[in-house]
Amino acid sequence: MTATGASESVGARGAPVTGPWWWARRRSAVLDVLLAVASGLECMFEGVRFAQEAQLPELLGLFFGLVAGPVLLVRRRWPVAVVLVSIAVMPAEMGGLLSVVGLYTLAASEVPRRITALLAGMTVAGTLVTTFLSMRQDIAAQEDFNPPVWFVPAMSLAVGLVLTAPPVLWGLYVGARRRLVESLRERADGLERELSLLADRAEERAEWARNEERTRIAREMHDVVAHRVSLMVVHAAALQAVALKDPEKASKNAGLVGDMGRQALTELREMLGVLRTAEGSAVRGAAGSDAPERLAAVASRARLKAEPEAAESGAGARVAAPVRPVGSAAAPVSGAEVDPEGPCLADLGVLVGESRAAGMAVELSVEGAGEGESASGRRYGAGVEQTVYRVVQEALTNVHKHAPGARARVRLAHREGELAVQVENGPSEGGAADAGLPSGGNGLVGMRERVTALGGVFVSGPTEAGGFRVSAVVPAPVPAG
Image 1 (cartoon, rainbow, N blue to C red):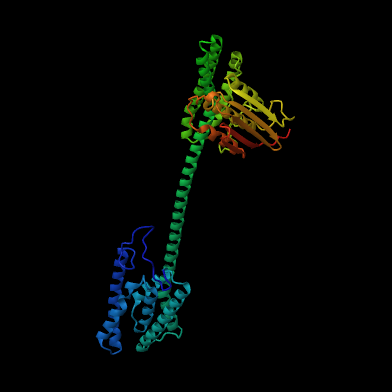
Image 2 (image 1 turned 180 degrees about the vertical axis):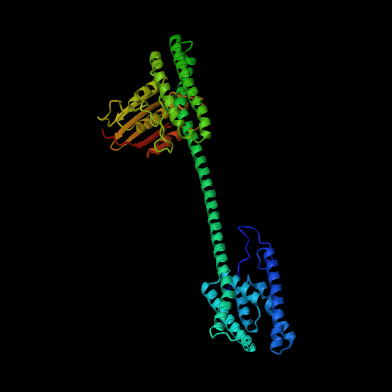
């Protein structure tokens, strides 16, 4: 709607505009045409009567009414012009319908209220003067009717208010209701857009969470199973090499392979069982957050069951439970967020012993070690120690896979506020080829994710001597008490 009252031809809430010109709908055009025809007939009749009273040609009055009446056709486009025309023809006592409909349209439009009040006041004044003069002439023509002095002004004012106030008030009400409906529609459209945006964001977050859970579950299974399977392959290769030369050693290696295989299968079955039982809950949106924690608990139980068997076989093998990365969005589960029975720095000796039992020459050195370990053997938080343990475990597994026969060195450095670990191996001795173990490229990725989740730094790459080095620095403040 412009300052002159011109309205935009818009449909209802996104509906296409089907009417011609400035009409939003065809029925609005039909209504205005009917009103214009009625107003034209009225103005022509009143124009002929005015011409007769003024002793003018009737054709002039008829033409004047034919021009003024159909102005209602443009009432939606220019309501101010319609009201001005109705005020202009008032002296000829014409345009009753034109005045009423014009005032209603003006009040219902977006024309400033001061303009509406001004034109309504002019209409009241014009009606008052016209009615006053007409009634004075009628009373003067009747000799037997002598009303009091206040009668004519009061009746003129009443007629002016009756012909002006109702259409103006009704137009103001309809305009206010229309604006309210439009504002409600805009708010509803805004809410729909916001809900759509929130739904899209929720879907993105759900997809991100699903990907995170898949990554975490894959990392946990990789940490728990891959190391033991890699040792199995190494022992199997050693068994093949000494089967004829040293039957006693071959028998020992066969026992180790069997024990490790049984432990790996037990852990794998329990983890897959957790995933199957969690699948139904994940559909309801509940299992996606606790599956890795349940995997951690399963791995912990598998480690506890595996320790006696490993001790009896003399391998010193120990299955370590996976750790839930610190800072994950998943809700904590009691006893599973960071497994208190999981591996710690004190278990690095056992881990190195496993690799030595598989035939690898491994050197372990610790720098800056001091007092501060708790009764459980931990000096730092469980998440920190388990992360360092996993880095060493995966690094040694990669040495078994890709550099069989190479010498390895594990260095652990206790510094103020941080813990540094480095695993470096030389080239394979005697030009030994790759062990042929499958690798999905997840080992280094998993180590990096664990370290960066704690706010640490992880670096890996080949050395100048032809080996490979893995280094990690993890923030490790000593917990109080």
